[in-house]
Length: 92
Length: 511
Image 1 (cartoon, rainbow over the protein chains, first blue to last red):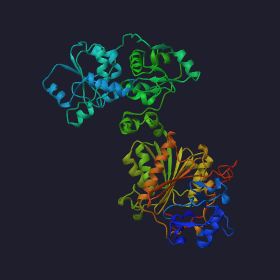
Image 2: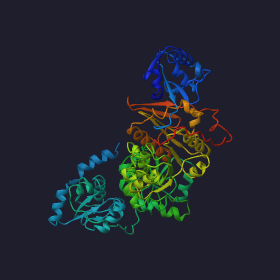
Image 3: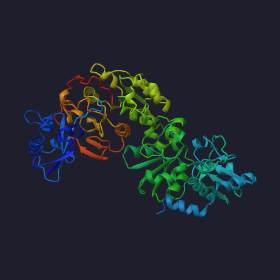
């Protein structure tokens, strides 16, 4: 079970939880499972084809998964996946 | 190995130290003694003890005998804190003065205890007699030194002249440590004692004693420039004329001048730098306060909004009297009171593709303290186009982010992270947004720190790194940012043009 950190603007879709634990051995697997558990959250971070939206990034620990192997990046149980969306400011 | 601390410990044993009240008693009893101020000329100009004779440490070896002909007379030396005066006492003892003491705690403790301070005086040096080189010290001429520097050999040219002399011109690449501070500062400036040192003064009369003191502190290779800076200049060698800090600058920025990473050169860089702040809101206010206080010479502030009561919870430049006024005017007024010597430039306008390039041109750093995506992308794109580092901050409730987008320093740009802004329906809604007032204070001051690091070229700015702050957990995490080799902007050969994205909040008030 990897830990997925939920940023403040998206916590409405996880019932307020700031992190959730998700099964998965790759980033794609984790995102798919996240979609099963929290479908509205997945719609925020992925487009209709399941691709990551261009204003959201995923980090495995401290690295952008695009600098690793993208969706194929391996995920183990003690990894922390952070969702980091573009945020503009306080009173957008 | 004798270093500064060892020498100091030995001096404390061999030199009598007087407490301020003891010295005051001697003055009241009209004892016969000479009180000498061994601080730097610019320090003595600011104020001195009553009756003190100015004799900066660097001039003791050449001028003491003229000013104090009777070596059996009692001499009390003082400096700012009581360290340099111990070294001065050692110099005087070596010259044959038999009764030398030092004022413990120096000028600082004297004035803290409420004793009398007189107006400062200026020091003028006498004509020096020729001096012999001490054993172990060699001398080289201007031609030989120029050849050494051209050949790229590892030498440190140590300029021990007074600050105002150095300000008028120096050898490029030389390090300045005023003679009075030499023993105290040399080990920080040049830690390796085998380093080849070439010491220069103004005319060759004072460098020999400085060189001897360096040998006593275990530096193994010490030479002097014969004829000093005057000979260098007379030989037609290149002279660097640095930006000159005024006495007022030196007083205001004294705590910067003591930091090796800043110093007078760094402060001069800051005073000559131009920084543009986008937004005079929650982020821009604290950033502006600290950058103005630090002496960033030109501070541009761009905002189109007016001050509203709801801004005062976090926008610390504004106050109840500024409600309804343009934010740039309110900010400029507050900043001018803080630092009237810097240039504040206001841009009371909304940023769009028609004005962005004109406004940004000429600035060295842009600080993004905006609250909306259309402006954020314009800032990024223009900074990429003009090669300006972009110090980015954003805040949301308790969460903040800071990074420095600077493709010219090898990092990514904002579009490497987020190629496009979210559409209105997927951005956090206006109603759910909000920010705890302290948060932009924390993120804005971090932006100010990153800006100064970029301006000075020191430390490791957050280039290619995103600092993520969670206020509720008080956690600071650093993520490595991905530099997109196919980025449409920073990796493009041709600039793709500016985009005016749609504003989608009716009141996009600045953070």
